[in-house]
Length: 230
Image (cartoon, rainbow, N blue to C red):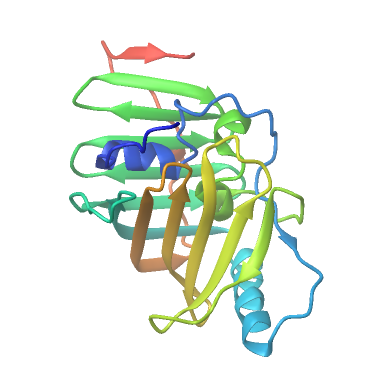
């Protein structure tokens, strides 16, 4: 019987959120952003939630926001709150910076870099292996319809319309991703993994389609850092 994984630190939460970049690298799926809308009858409210999500995808080519994150284990015990900033630009470019512990995750369109400042260690992997069926794919992936996710409208709560994205493949250990919208603005992302952990990210000061410095999506390992996977 599989033991329940203990509560994740902010570092582990970051890895799980972005496809568990160097833990779950055995996925054979080579898909970036992909959504399948089930052709089943839905209520007007449910359809509106799906439409909000699709409108966000179509109209948002880049973004920038502050975020706070908390990971809750299968017993409901919450860890410390982590915070930072994120930027993304489609397709496949993103930068997530955690303040404490100091960590940076960069997607340059070809590879994903995970830098832990305290360990002075960099893990790098091909984008396709680390990116498919993940929240990063929902934000920074391509906008075409594909078969990576089943998209379902959830019930309205917390003043938000919710969309549930269920990965077609479970290789990344992700069970589902919930996205909370107010009007056409993305406010909350929630990730449930195969161990019962839940990661909740609240976005603030979200800017849609800002002009971003492309240098933010280039990562050069610091001198003396241990680079794994390149």
